[in-house]
Amino acid sequence: MNSPEGSTLWFIPDGYLATPLENDPVYKNHESICVMNVTDQDAHLKLDFYFADRPPIEDVPVLIPAKRCIHVRMDDPANTGGQPLPLDTPYGTRIRSDVPVVVQYSRLYSTTRNISLMTTMAYSG
Amino acid sequence: MNSPEGSTLWFIPDGYLATPLENDPVYKNHESICVMNVTDQDAHLKLDFYFADRPPIEDVPVLIPAKRCIHVRMDDPANTGGQPLPLDTPYGTRIRSDVPVVVQYSRLYSTTRNISLMTTMAYSG
Amino acid sequence: MNSPEGSTLWFIPDGYLATPLENDPVYKNHESICVMNVTDQDAHLKLDFYFADRPPIEDVPVLIPAKRCIHVRMDDPANTGGQPLPLDTPYGTRIRSDVPVVVQYSRLYSTTRNISLMTTMAYSG
Amino acid sequence: MNSPEGSTLWFIPDGYLATPLENDPVYKNHESICVMNVTDQDAHLKLDFYFADRPPIEDVPVLIPAKRCIHVRMDDPANTGGQPLPLDTPYGTRIRSDVPVVVQYSRLYSTTRNISLMTTMAYSG
Image (cartoon, rainbow over all chains, first blue to last red; front, side):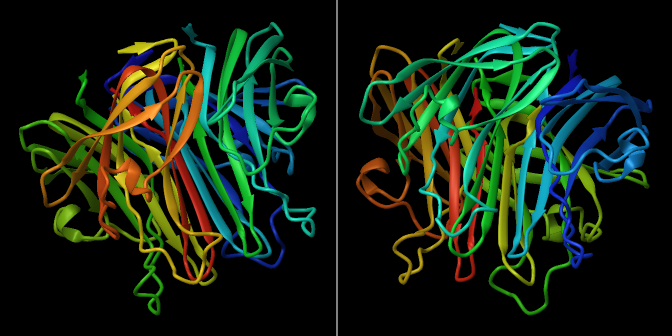
């Protein structure tokens, strides 16, 4: 499933979105699944969300056009099947694509005190 | 040992838990080993902890149910063999599983001044 | 494309440079693509930048001399084709090299409140 | 060079140690190369440091005993060939070992304002 243009299967075990602080519109905490499609075909992704104590949410569609890079915000219900993911809840994401893509995961965590960033390449199956 | 559902062997060389600050229940510093099991079989993990100056602690069991994602807290003695890991002590973790899983490691470090996050995929053997 | 000296193809899907704060010359926020060339041949890189809503910028040349390690600053127009990359804009980078190199991506994010770092190895195709 | 116990070759392109703040003994900024040796043989590492504008420093020995995990501090001249690495200077590290090990790189950056952490698995050749 790996090619010089990426992989069609990716995993991100550490997903978590803390309830955003109401008084902080600029530095709102958020997560992004950053997807790069260098092929000349649109990539039709399916996202599956896994949880600790309930069945997975599966087959959520996301489109990454040909030769584009989209930072898919996980706090946008359009990217999580029309409903927001539960807040303050550990989850993991599997990404399946019909064409090879490359996936990186990043989180900005904004507390009452400061901003913190973390990032990692996703794991390609 | 690799499959489209992950790997049965993972390593995390940088483990470290600073003594939590007493006065900070919300942003307590902690580490999580985030494990995603997309198979339809329960994953029986064995965790081995390696140290700089003493023999390893081996074969600590952790269960990740089928089709679930658990963020395993390392400050919970239930996940470290019944006894807490030593604080302020460098260690590394090897994770062995009977079914393929995907593993990511994250740390939240809360000092007297601020919060910081770091994360990385574990290394799959 | 992989060898004991690295790979000739790398991807970084999460690029983003927030507008730097005017009043902070020391801790200016920035991104670096860190490239290590352990071979005895100069590495001629070509960088391709992908965006969410416009065609990619391709074939931007960067030189990494033999047996050198350069932290390529993305806020230096010399490394982005003579023109600065757009600020506050998600993008991804593909790196192609004529000799094997190793690539890591790091970001320092300086807000009005604090400094935050994140890093990851790039993905090798 | 890869085995179920790790790899004998690793790379870390983003090394950088800012001059530590004099007035901060507790949260001194530092870098660690975290090495896990799960084999029953001592690992004899050789570290090579690469720079932007000067020849590499090569063959610096570091010992990781059998079944131990050491967080090798890069601000300890014992681990960098008897002399400290230059401060405020980009560099990269290659790690060669006679037995398979697993390597992760972490940095704690302490500024006048706050603490920040970053980490990544090293790249295995």
